Structure formats: C-alpha cells, structure tokens
Image (tube, rainbow, N blue to C red; front, side, top):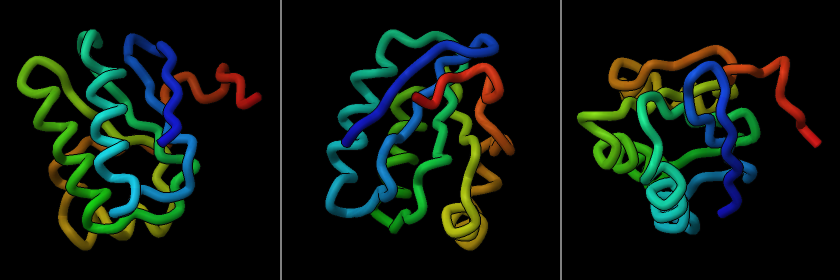
Length: 112
C-alpha cells in the first residue's frame, strides 16, 4: 500500500497512491496509516483523490485509523470520487467524518 505525506494548512495530508482500498490491502493500509500518523499532531487529512473503489474492509480500515487517532487528533477525508463518496453516504459514514471537497493546499501540491 503506497501512501505519501505532506504538511499543508496546518494539517498532515496523507495521500493514498492506489486506486483501491479493499480486503486485499485493508490491513496494509491500516498499518501504514498508523505508522505515518503516529507522530502527527492535530488534523490528519486522508486524500482519497486517486481511490476509485472502496469496500467494507477498506471502510473498516479507515474507521480503525479514526479510532487510533482519537481523541487528541482528528481524521478528515478529502477529494472523494463519486463511487467512494457513495459508499460513505450509503453507510452514513459521511456523518462521522468531516469530508472536504479537495485536499488542503491542493493548488500548491506537486503531483509529480
């Protein structure tokens, strides 16, 4: 599971560099997120712009990260595509997470 991290607008932004978060990678995702965010303070924003598919295992892994960060740190989601947004809406997880339309500092980031 490939993730990248950067600081933007006072938040740690973690970008998922894969097209899927599903049962095949859920544990790897969860472990990688815990490792990357262990020292983070304040907000952590999960940039899902490149993710086109998420299943219940992937959703569970994201919820697990939310619980790992709480109560001192907040997990927000950003740049959800239509299919991913639908999963969050159907499961009502859009009421649990703050969902941003785009990643913090999106115009300033380097997509290279």
